[in-house]
Length: 329
Image (cartoon, rainbow, N blue to C red; front, side, top):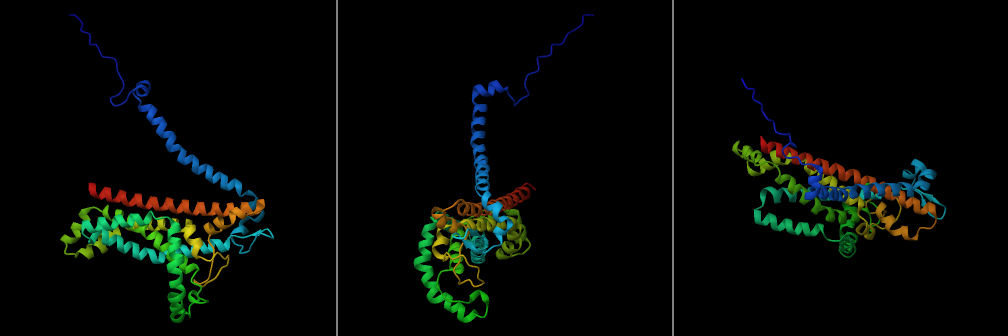
């Protein structure tokens, strides 16, 4: 009986994969390498920025150590530098802005995403996006010529007469100060909260809304008790994003905060922020210690904004993943 032989074809590459040379000839690998280099430059710039800030502040770090962050004296003539007044002013103005912007921003986002007709929602969102693109110096001018006079003539005297028993609302009404800077920042960060929160709310699966309505909930009840809790993580992300934006703002705050390195419980008092002191004094700084103290302030501000932006993005991604998982189920 003649033996039959079976010819097995040579095993080629797995379907969907091609040799490196073939990819190179067709341009896929070249495109991959070039785009990878482009993406790597972002990481490289970040690393170089941190290194430069760290290296450029070595003298101040070695001389003052941790005391740099808890000392309130800022005396360039005596060579004594402490960051506490600037950290305090940055945090106070940011917190005041969030206290104003968060309720307004989230309320507006809920209206645009859940309650407004589609045409009205899209139109208002267009104008909100325009507000987010306005240069900060314009908001500073708005603060100087409109908000500061209103604060000095009406709002601060009213708060002092009604809530003057609280330390937050004592002292002379200059018009400038922590409170005014917080209001200007609130106007600036509201568009960020509205835009991000609206997108997060729209990512909530429709099944969640329909299930609540089917059980007898009203439109508002389904929004407040189902949609908003589902999107809570992403909304928190928008708040962190707005906080990072408020911490790093320079020009608008510089124009209305008063630029005085003091720590005061009163929101009417003039103050200073990290970004403002860097912008005002860096060009006039003389001596290595003075310059490196300002650079160390920049390092602190960079780390704060970097961490907060990272947390915000993470929270938004988690909410989007939850929405996609619920949509598949």
